[in-house]
Length: 400
View 1 (cartoon, rainbow, N blue to C red):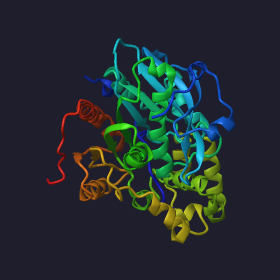
View 2 (cartoon, one colour):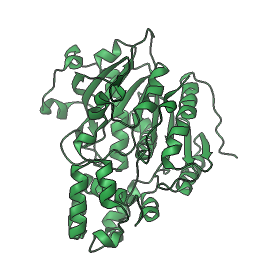
View 3 (cartoon, rainbow, N blue to C red):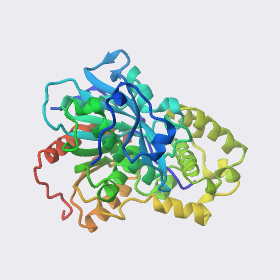
View 4 (cartoon, helix red, strand yellow):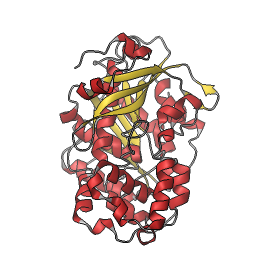
């Protein structure tokens, strides 16, 4: 099935990786747990808060850090341009910083499809693998908004690796953070410089957010985007993973596209084994999905390859990154030994964005596998974003 992405979760994130040197606000009741009705949500604008509840941020189980945290639901836009509701988390350090503080909207890598996998569910209990990386941003004094993505923590199936839906969810999480009264009291405002960051599935989501920002959320003061391990071309990623240890991600991506576009009719292509595995994936998180789908080829789970059908080909082509310049500078990074997202896919994205005149700084990590690159690049990526928040210039390296 020519659809895939990933996952930072090929290995545990090390604690050392955390070391790091225009719309009216909703009522104050939103930050104290008052929920708007579904009808209000449908009538709201993208980024409007539907509900907010106090939460907690733990880096590891039993290890909270001093952070103001809220679990939120907010309005966003799906891949078909319709209003939807997405859940997420807003984090603000407990410090004495005054004035507009930087805001990072952070897109996590693959966690799974079921609601219990959502970052907002797992932050309070310290079971989000990228929490140590996010802590690195909080230690710098930045506020952080983390989307759960469409259908992950809210009704419906998670639209896994559907680029447009992920990009709008990332941008609207930043809008929601700016409109959350509790966060506003701690220095998050419409004047906050905004950074976008994500790796793997989050690399796709952050890349889509970067390309959409200028037209979808032009009021956000986006200073730059750091995207790594980006599955910019899903058919190439699927071909790379077909039949190997991470093949389950291919089927997960097919589930995500079928959720966004039900007319694709995934079920009619699946055989009994494919239906069994998709059932496991819809009810479980990454570990269960990976085990169920490991070493499965397209032929093992289908009666007919949907990738040969024009409607599937069209939807997958719509996910491709690099067709539009992001506008703000980009820090793009990839491991040369990436076993899940081909290094050449990252290089091509760099070439495509450079060809469109965007400022791109490219970092290639020799001998580095997929999960390892997420850890290695976290601090350099945040250092780069820190310079953008300070309005320091960058020329990129498109000419090299």
